[in-house]
Image (cartoon, rainbow, N blue to C red; front, side):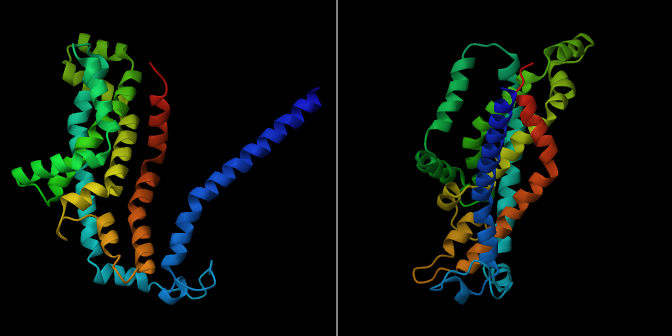
Length: 281
């Protein structure tokens, strides 16, 4: 009986590892393929016979992308928009999440459901009203206006995620701080936020990645090179009679570097925050 259980456990372990390796391959293979494509000459990319490994390696695609396409400006614009979006969500969403977590007030449930409804609607439905509003207030075709547009649909995500982390923070410590004379706002900054800092960091990372990769709003709300972001810049490289696969692959690799660096820096804190958010205090 014990031997049968041992064999069954071993079989399930093997199946689990095979599934995990398969999923890892599916996730990593497109990135590896894009990287290999970025190192190929253009004539080696579109061929009759598939070349999985480049026979000749070149960095010409990266040089052309960086020097001829204005790509550095696009990356800087994306950094500005992403940073501004995270700051706007951080300043407004932190207070909102704390209020939803700690206070019981009339309309609380309806407001939370309203945040969910905003996330349920397709983003394309928000384009026309946002376009009209941005044009009337003079924020159309600007990085600040684009950041505000991103905040309109990322703030609900920020509030919902951060509320879960605030819920997991023990209320007893906050009550003790209040007894010692700390104000409600002071208790939030000195007790609750330090406890939930990993969750706050994880939430900011999710918002930053969503803002960094957003394409539809950036395409519709920007018209000039001075405010476009990198996804729009890559799309505009595709012409009617040309498709620069090498430069597109190089742009994709450069664009994921900030995300990889960000994850490498905050990986431990992010995992700890997600784990803490799964435990209710």
